[in-house]
Length: 279
Ligand SMILES: [Zn+2]
Ligand SMILES: [Zn+2]
Image (cartoon, rainbow, N blue to C red; front, side):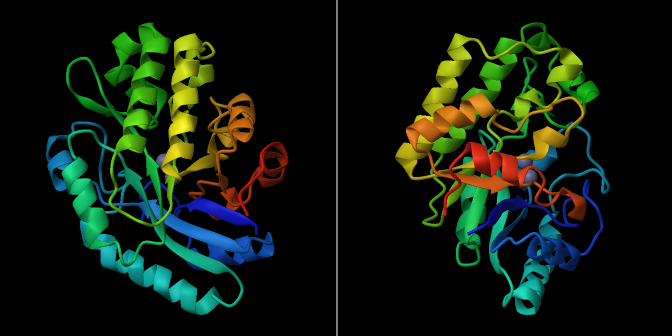
């Protein structure tokens, strides 16, 4: 099995407008046997109503609720077209948002029959003033929302890792596989801010995260995106944490997190060589 467990489509408005057909054709060309379409699920209405971060029709990361049926139809269309060449799995990348667990769970329940797999991720954190900010948008937004936390990056890491731990503890109510997304996304702009390595306390949080993933029967997203980000230069999580996950026998699935066709399959070979990808 060669699987890409984390991919996007034109329904994430920050991605490319390339048709899903081109993604599938590229994945087939690269020898992938399994492909999970995991577009960002619509964010809860109540969350959007209070969110003050950057968003517009063009830069919203998540699909709109009004686009849900079109997304499903698009996945059905490519399944019919390419299903004899590659196994296409239906999924979402779902945001874990503290305080919105009920809405998130309701969405998952409503779509449970459709969902094959999900990636559960943290992209937003609450700052010291109670505002919710995106941590992966750009360095300016990270600075705008988290100036206090940036003065002590370990506190920022701690905040993110705490949310990742909470996401694992969140009861999705699904019986389908759950993969925990890019657990070290908070390091996306690490070169820009000259972030230090994780301190001992944060390393312990990561160990707890890996152990919880294992205990829950979940999987770890071995996410290649950071390797191609100018200010990151490492996978989420990095090679050292991946070695720890291997030692703990945490099930791992490669995720290109492709937002354009050109991202597909990047760094697959080096990541597959360093971890035992689940087959
Ligand atoms: Zn993500
Ligand atoms: Zn993603």
